[in-house]
Length: 276
Image (cartoon, rainbow, N blue to C red; front, side, top):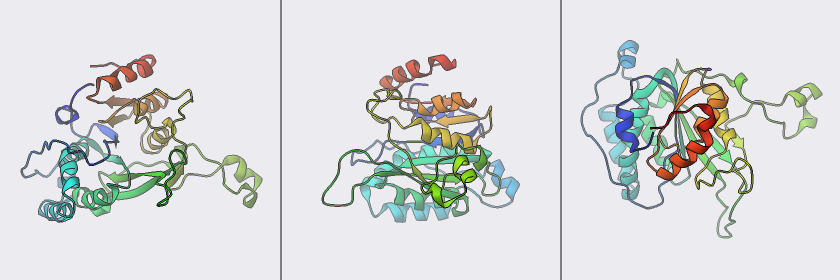
């Protein structure tokens, strides 16, 4: 779908998605117009069923938010843009669903504190480090060659995760394990070594923020079942939809950039995706 993702997200049915993957624009110092709706959140059915205040923290969240953001006004503007979209992602997740928030080193430390307050610290599952080795090399510091993906559950005891469904990867020291283990490969850890999309490779669409399909494939394999719905409100080149279609999952992609929709139409036309 093309358009501002916030009103679209607000129009979707509650608890409809097994995974919400958010790869928002990284905060590079440019201000984004705030789109906040202030008010009191009514406890959802998950909280009522659990008998306590899992999820949004009420006053505790507000205190944490204002204290954290007081350190960096630039980030406060960015979070005013991102926060209502995360609130909607929480609402849209199924009771056993997982949020994957893809950021870089500029934002992840703020986001971790704030998501602990927003979702609840008990709902934090992982911080995935996606490490790659490509691009410019600074000589004044260690070059930044990784992104961070924060993983939070809608409920800390109910979330779906199947490590055995994930493609295995080769051992870095295969001589230290048996031949059988070396042939099978190992399950990934929370550090993912994966190249970026090659500028000359067949996967390349030309979209500037395109993510490798291997990253999304791993997320979807581990956190969804065939037929589940996957949400990506910052869809860009459509990698999430491509991975979901190959794994027989359903998907909803949103982006307000017409160029992104053009790329997705070309990339996903064979999947039967409907564009609006």
